[in-house]
Length: 248
Image 1: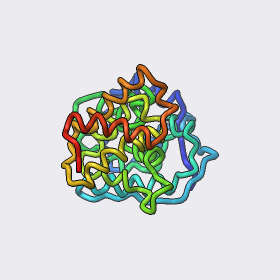
Image 2: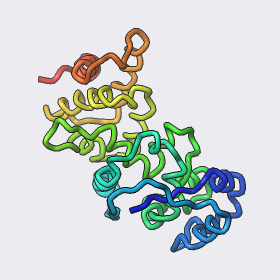
Image 3: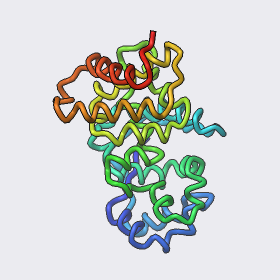
Image 4: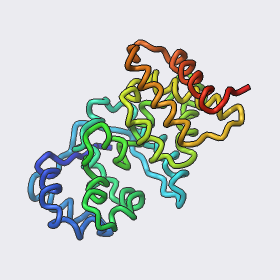
């Protein structure tokens, strides 16, 4: 499967001349966009390839998001992170190859009157890092990239926890911290929360908030990038013990 992308001229035109495009974002097919991008010379076939894949369209987003993380990451596991930061790639795939998916996953936003909600469905509107976890396609790959655990028999164990409810909200919260780009730190935080869950504690959004807030404080006096996964888990556990009580 060859991956398509649209160039910066297309993205800039979408943002500047939004009203020219507005009524076509909910078209049943992507024909209008493909024709326009082709005529303008804005759509290109990249040198990047991946395994062919089909997205899941379950009525429950919690179910489909979890399945689609694995589908996208397994298919695109060889994608370089530098390319995965490029909005031209994700926009190109959504406009040219995964139109049905974005219509399904962002149906509410695409039918809203919010200019930013509509464009957020395809392009980056909040800065590269944050947008990578807002975009309904790129966030699937980045979740897989950062939380796939090669050391466990179930490589997606921590992803199961993050995506069991309110996945989109959880991953945006986690990604708002600088340490989340470090795989060891991200896995360490989730190891700690998973331990508490396995002991019977009900995990809520506040667990993620408190863990993130504390680790950011630690980063003010210690180089976080020097911390191991295990050390990260232990440090965060100490904080959560004080906040929510020690677990047996």
